[in-house]
Amino acid sequence: PAESIDAMTMPEGWAVECFASEQDFPELANPVAMTFDPEGRLWVLVIPTYPQYLPGIELDDKFLVFEDSDGDGRADTCEVFAEGLHVPTGFELEDGGVYVAAQPNLLFIADTDDDGKADTSETVLHGFGTEDSHHALSAFEWGPGGGLYFQEGTFHHSQIETPHGPTRVVNGAVFEYQPTTEKVRVHVSYGFANPWGHVFDTYGQDIVGDASGGPNYFGATIASK
Image (cartoon, rainbow, N blue to C red; front, side, top):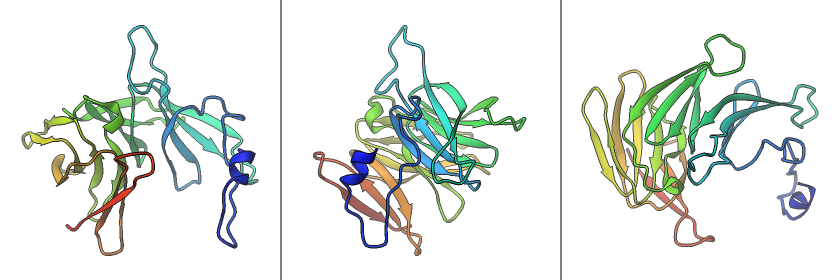
């Protein structure tokens, strides 16, 4: 970590510090997504079984929760919120639980007894493409209208079953899921390669980062609602 920080060039007044690393926490291997919760804890999804599950190998993909309990700017504890997941490629926190991609499903796992560990798992949506885990569901983001947005890239053929009927898409899309109604729709159908980033600006427009073409290419697509 120290060598990585030394190689960075930061704007004046900015600094980089190591919050957690594999030196201190060996379980922090193959991290794919992370976010902070309102309590300041860092949630990290790790997928050591990427790119695919192999028969005879025990699933070891999990959620880790890091906390800086003494306020020194570095994590000093690491707890496992959930384990035994199947190549989970993205997630978003919700009150008491987590929406997590585990193709062909979107799961909601929750901690119902407040012991810091998930004890329930519900399949919320089923039917997402499984052709290539590299392009699987990722970049989860709550939208300004209360919908949960996530996306997949090329090569996937998804037919999502819902109480309102199926939703179909081929070769890349941004989905919107409404937890209160269980409705899901294709928000954007586009030939993404690796749409690994998604944010909304102050005008409610989407900015989607699509890494494609090579290791140094980054494109941005804006989709107005």
